[in-house]
Length: 235
Image (tube, rainbow, N blue to C red):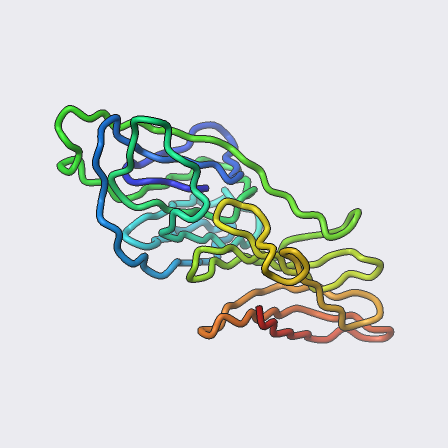
């Protein structure tokens, strides 16, 4: 989900799905803001108890208790990588924010907000809210794939790790561009798998080192036992 500039939105209804939805506030006038280096993205694990994730520049999402059934890594990044082109005659007047993971379904309404100073809206301009939807799915195999962890890299690219059922299950990781398309420069046209044991492996966690290398943690199941498994990928 991308959000541009200024508003506070309380999502109505029993369910909210983060499907790569693009939300932005634009002006029906000319103008804009100067380009500045984006601050570091933020990722926080939120579970059934709920919580608040505060991202770059004060962008945040407030998740009530009971909205999530399992622990989910909620990420907020200040980036316009992959954001769609604006309609003719409109322009942004603040930064763009990406909220992940796409496809997350909340059982209760959540509140998302991005910073906005009404005083900076030029006279005669009208702020409007625009949104489009896009769901991204990646199949490693014919069935049995599952995502378990997500991180946003400093360049705005999105890494998702879990398992792929290719015979026995394997560590699986995919890297996406900001627009949700697979990053073909990573692994096998955007995906990468690692196999340890003879019965099944699964990545449960994901971290990005300062040098950009990707660390996956999880388990590997052998003939008679199951143990910890760790892999480091040099992209």
